[in-house]
Length: 280
Ligand SMILES: Cc1cc2nc3c(=O)[nH]c(=O)nc-3n(C[C@H](O)[C@H](O)[C@H](O)COP(=O)(O)OP(=O)(O)OC[C@H]3O[C@@H](n4cnc5c(N)ncnc54)[C@H](O)[C@@H]3O)c2cc1C
Image (cartoon, rainbow, N blue to C red):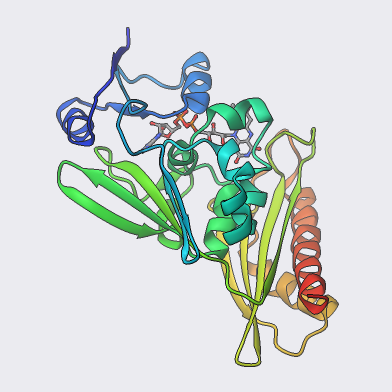
């Protein structure tokens, strides 16, 4: 038997998470429902945060985006402000599973799920986004670059919940590309993914790269690609990524197969973004 708790305030939710043994936050429920059906989720208490005011607010300013934990993934894909201010994030959120999952799954549940194959964290790493959290002990801001700590592990404490993500505006001039390679069907989890953000400042060209499904946790790399052709930048990024690639074999392919996909994903994302910036 599972008890479903439906707090009306953030304080009430934090109290429940600290007071109950092993309680879990219920966001959109897309992952929780599957884990329950598979018999691998044993918690007796779920804390549904869907009624807490403010968690479904999406704020877009020229400085960036602040997105509440209960904003849907579909909204991140389609909101005109998100597409304008952080287009790389809109691209990656738009590639999560199917429209049906994207309509139900929430931004907070997505990142808290902690899976190494998730699409959005690749873009959030490149954009240097921050996760805001709350617990009965107070609030924290954790860079996404520090959020994924080990295989299926995040920096969240058991009594802590994600309240929002803060994504700084994509610098201009700049260009981005998200490449996702799935082995089974287009809407499936990726076997390799790469989010590339290329920007220019003071005569320097910088690349921020986020990689998914290619190692036990999402990977972030920064590279100076000043003076390089798109193809040379793509090759440099592929070489820089190589020591970080350690794909996990599963029904979607062997480690070697995913490694090959990963190299192609990195090259395509980086050359595509550089070419777009050259023509901007
Ligand atoms: C068929 C299918 C295909 C999928 N394919 C992809 C894919 O291609 N790419 C991809 O990126 N993802 C994919 N996913 C995963 C999907 O992105 C996640 O299921 C979803 O984002 C989780 O969001 P949710 O709101 O439904 O979370 P929930 O299912 O509610 O929760 C997921 C986890 O996060 C915790 N949690 C939820 N909200 C919070 C919060 N605010 N604070 C702290 N912890 C919280 C829960 O306790 C649970 O541990 C797929 C899922 C399904 C079902």
